[in-house]
Image (cartoon, rainbow, N blue to C red; front, side):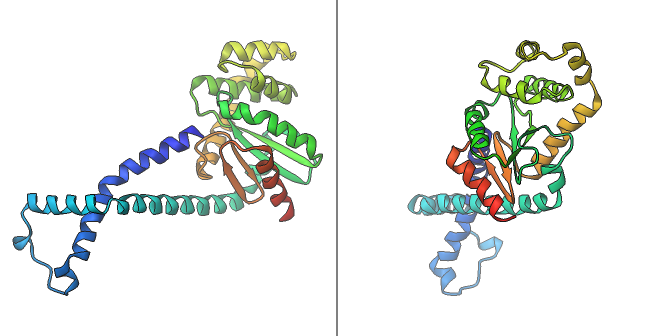
Length: 264
């Protein structure tokens, strides 16, 4: 979730120069001569550069709220556009999102509603929502959970994701996932090997499977799918026709699930 907040702050700073230009345009639009319908001056009659800059500066200083209002509206439109695009992708790629045969499944495999989680083993927010996910499963025997490995926090995360998918081939994914999420510290190779040994994974087989191009391809598919869904932070959840980005509490998660169930 921190990545999303950083992106939004950066976006605001990037559009400030554009807003200055807009403010200049607004100054001309509200200039008395403009309102009276006088013809716009040609380039040879334009204000001297220093006078123009001073008048624009004065206008902005006297009306600073227009900058923040424009930034707010721009961000709202960006979010709306992203949600619209995500909705289209949800419909077009529903099988890949909800029914990918290679994605690990928890909860009730035959449940009547599906919750998809995109996560990273090194994401602290993902660890925070792990007990919430567990509570949601316990409270809803018809909940099916799909896990999407989404390693965006560096090489250690990629290593952990590939290891998890390799462990999945041995039928121990859920145990591995739980231990990785409750164990504190960086999710690196040492932690992966320790936890894999703890739950009885065949380590050599795991290492071999981790090098299988099919596992690397699956990680890449998840990354591409998340990008198409405008998911750029973890954790993120999908149920029904909704995408929720960022950590949530139990009430919000259950509301998402119930809304999806009610629309079936």
